[in-house]
Every structure is written in C-alpha cells, then in structure tokens.
Length: 410
Image 1 (cartoon, rainbow, N blue to C red):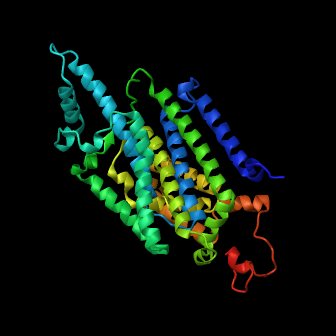
Image 2: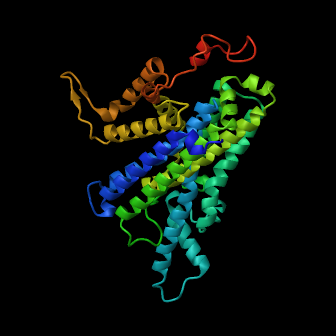
C-alpha cells in the first residue's frame, strides 16, 4: 500500500503546523490586529525573515541536495523585487500625478500624464522619458508574470550554457558570482532604466490603499510571506522525496556515476537551478515591498555568500535546517546591527556589535564547518536518533569501487 506524501514526510506536517502556529500568534499580538504587543516594524522584520527563509530553502535545494554551490541566487531574489517594485512605483506615481493634474483648468492629455510620471520617477537621474523596459509597468498581472519569467529565463539560459559545458565545482561558483556582479554593476548605471544607485523606493505604499494603515499592510505581507514559505517548503520536500530527489543526491555525491547510469545530469541540474531561481524571485517579490526600497547594492555578490553561510549554519541537506539557519542569522543580525545588543566594555576597548557582528558571523561559520559540519539541523538528528545506515564497512554499491560507509558518512 502506497503511503501518502505527508505519511512519508512527517517533518513537513510538523513544519507547517509550527509555521501556522507562529503566524497565528504574531497576527493576534500585532498592532494591525489590535493587541499592540508586537510593533508594526517588527512584524515587517518577521515578514522579511520568512522571505529569507524561503530563499534559504531554494539555496539548500540547489546546493545541499544537488551539490551546486551557487553564489548568484540573490541576483534572482533582487530581480523578483525589481519586477514587482516597478509596478508599485509606477502605479503609485500615476495616482499622484493624476490627482495633481486633475485640478488643472484644462484636462491633461495621456501624453502629459506620461511625461509627468517620467519626470517624477526618473528626474532623480536626470531623465524624463520612460524607458522601454517600463512598457508594462502599469499592469500588475504582467509584472507578476515577469517576477517568474525574467529570473527564470536568466537562470535557464545561464544554466544551459554552464551545464552543457560541464562546468562544475568552484569554477561554477565563480561563474555564478560573476553573473551576479555583472548584473549588479549594470543596474548601478543610470542608463539601465532602473534609476541606478537610487533604486526603487516607496514600495511599502500600496497604490490606491493610502487609507489602509501600515500596521494592516504589514500583516497582509506577513501572511503572504508565511503562505509562500509553507508552499515553498512543501514543493521542495516533494521534489527531494521521490526518485527525482534520489537522482539529484546522486549527482551531488558522484556525478560521473549518475551520468554513466544513463541519467541526463545536465537536465536535472538545469531544472533544479531554474526552479530555485524562480523560488528566490518570488521570495524577493515579497521581501522588498516590506523593506520599502531596493537598489543594486542588494544584489552584490556578498549577499549570496551570506546566503550560503545561513544554509551551512542551519545544516545543508535539511530543508528545516536551512529555515533555522536563515531565521536565526537574520534575527540576530537585526538585533546586533540595530543597536539593541549591549556594548561590552573591556577597559582598553569597547566591543560595539554594530561593527563586530560580521566578525562574529564569520567565526560562527568557521566553527560550524570545523566542529559541526551538519549544522544546527544535526542536533535534531541526535534527538531523533537519525544516523547513517550501519553496513559494517560493506560496499554501498554493486562493485568494489562504490563508496564505503565511512566515506559516505563524511
């Protein structure tokens, strides 16, 4: 008798139950619900943290399960933010301009409204014409489609070129980092059509909903982020639980052997790379309206490196580990860099955590790598008694060249 997906993956039900309880608790205690125990700014912080957990799942899927150390997934995250940010900024500016010109004695023409919108958005970079890439910025439906299509197409093309050339290991990581750097440098230019270093701002204001308080809007985005995280977790768990998951684990552990068995290694890697890029883009589309602003600095290569650190600390190869790592590091970063952590006076020097947080994060990463390579998720293995199968040193395959138990456990 075939067991259901949830019966075969009880951890998914546990995760969804914990996420639902967390969402309900925050909602009841939030300003928008009337309790006022949790401030609106902290609700936004929690909503952004859920988005970072979602991109961490994407990173764990591509790195922890498929073995592709991508240092460019924050580029897809940022592109998702830019796609939805274009509509948010255009639609809100259009309303402001229309209300302003409505008071004129002569009704404005469509061209006058368009020129005024261009001046409002691009005047900061010395322009007034609306670039071609903003042609569909007035359509929410099309921009939502672009959230998926633009990062997905970029990942598909990049992945096809890289995987068909059989670039692997550190060379592939360098290529993904170079892609991110090139995209970031391009967006820094005013000619990119996305306001250069200024980026897109005012994204927290939903067009046409000026009368809705931010406390309520923050809850809406928090709920959307929680829903996206839950669905993303179930999708990732479904991908890695069946035969497909076994194949990508095989690619991670011994790509040449999987290819010898007749599987299309490049096809599997391309699918995972593209899927995780889309997941990252959706996370970015939910993150930046809560942050209120996006600029090219958000897509710097260092952000993707931080993402890998989160997954490593949480425990790669474990979806819940990626969530734990992203949530823990994100919230600690907010605490340390927000001036909430007390300084430590040493007499001759005072440790200010705003300056020392990244050093602490770096030491944590090194410590986990050396002393707890399975990350925080490894603690759950100890609690549940999960361990590698005991084959008493026997071969793990049909021939003497297969990995032995000791090698597989390392």
